[in-house]
Image (cartoon, rainbow over all chains, first blue to last red; front, side, top):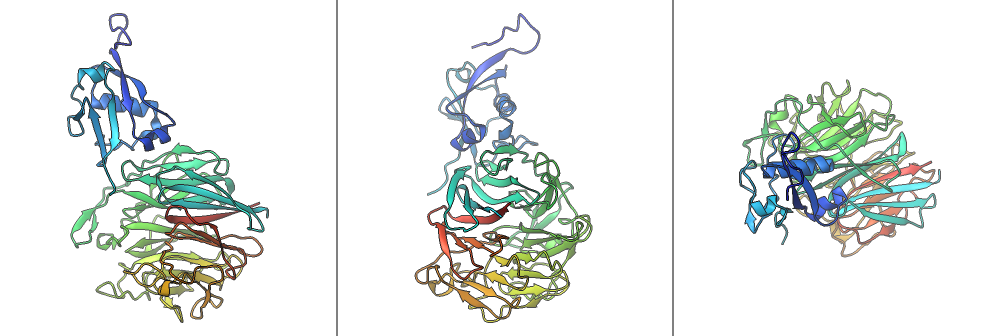
Length: 113
Length: 371
C-alpha cells in the first residue's frame, strides 16, 4: 500500500513493507514477530535493509557489512518463495513485497548438524 | 568487601553469578544474549556497575554490549572494528599470504581508571580501543604493523589477540599475546611494540628461538610486581622477571605443561595456578583427573589441588580466558570448563565447589570483587 501520496508533497513515495528477522536479531532489536517499515519506491533490497538499519541501529553490521553493504556470508534473503540473496541489491523487489502482501525474510543460513 | 560477581561467557550466552563474601550461596542470572557466543565479559575496575560483553554469532558477526547497572540491563554499543591502515598479509595455515580480515573480539580489557576506556583484542590479530564507552572503536595499528606481522600464522583457534594486560604502575605499558605470534610489549601506549619472546623455545615452529611465531596461550602478572610475567605457552609454563625481556621455563613437576589459563593469587605474587591438559591433540586433563596445580614458589614446584574436583572420567578443557581470581582477604579462584561447570575455591585453591554444572561450554570467566 502507498503510505504517502507523492502528489501532495515533494520526495519519494513510500510503501509499507513487512520484514521478518531471524530470532537472534529480533532479540537484539527487542522486537517480536514481523516489523513493518516504510521504504521509498522503488522498493529494493538495499532500501529495505537501509530502513531496517535506520529503525534498529543496533543491527548495523549484523546483516551486511556496514561499509561495503555486502551481505554477510551466512545471511540469506527470501521473498515470495524465491532466494534473493544473490540478486542485485538495487533491483526492485517483487510487487507483493513492495505492496506489503508478502514479507521480506532475513534469515540465517542453515548451520549445524 | 561485600561479595563477588562472576562474569561467565559461554558458547550460547552469558551468565552472572553473585555471592556474598562467604562465596557459598550463589544467585545465577542469565542467559544474557542467549544463542550468542560470548568470548569475553569484563567489568570496569573504576566502576563495577559498568560491564562490557563481546557476543558474536556466525551469522551476524560481532556486537558489543554494555551494562551500566551491574549486568541487569544491556545496551548495544558500537561494533565497527575497522583496521586503521591498509592491511598487508599474514600467513594462512598452508603458508600462503592471507589478507587481514576482522572476525571477532576475543578479549576486552577495561582501563583501570576510566570506565569509558576499553581495549579489545581481535581476530585477525589487532588491538582496538574505545574511549567513549564502546560507541566507537579505533585500532592501534602499530602492533599489526610490527615487522614480524607478515610471518604471523593462526593457531588452531585463529589468529587471535587474546591477552591484554595494562601495567598497573605505568600507564604507557601494555602487554598483549597473540596465537600464534607470541607476546608483545608497548612502552608508549600502543604507538610502538617490541616482541618479547626471548627464551621461549617452541618445538612446533621451524626455528624454536624465533622472534615471533610462538603460540602463547595466556599471560598473567601480579599488580605488586609488574616486571614479573607468567606465561602458559602451548607447551611450557614460563616466567620472566624483566617485563618479558627474557623468559625461563618453570614447568617443573607438572604432569603436563600443556594448558591454556594461568593466574596469580591476589595477595601472593609468587603463588600461581595452571590447569594441565594432556596435549595439543588431547584437550582434556591427564588421567581423566581435573586438577588445578598451584605453585607457591613462582613456578618449578607444583602441587595438585583436587578436593572437590572430579578425579575420574573427566574429559573437559579449561580455555585460556576461563580462570580468574577475586581480591577478597581470602583469595578466591574460579574457572569454567568446556563441560559447562564453573568451579570456585574460596580458600586459594585448597577446596573447590561447582557453582553451576550445566551451562553451555564456558569460554571465559572473570570476577569482580564488589565494594
